[in-house]
Image: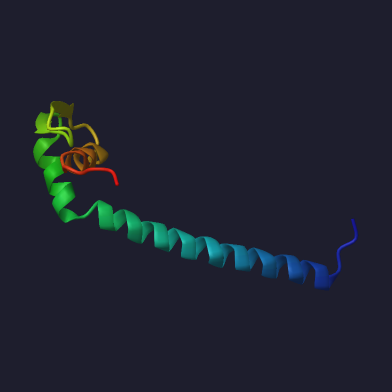
Length: 86
């Protein structure tokens, strides 16, 4: 394959733009994760790690969930809210 300086430069510029785009996307995703995995949620996770937590779900039914992951705490909190679908 024949490469010219211009074609290599263009390819490099494309790669740089890709890296910038991915870096920006990564930063945005980190911000979103930090919002949901905030200090309070982390503290609750540490406090209840390996515990089975009872709560009432949105249908007012008793539920138990073991906390193994930080997402378990998030799910417990979200699913304990009462709501009606519109």
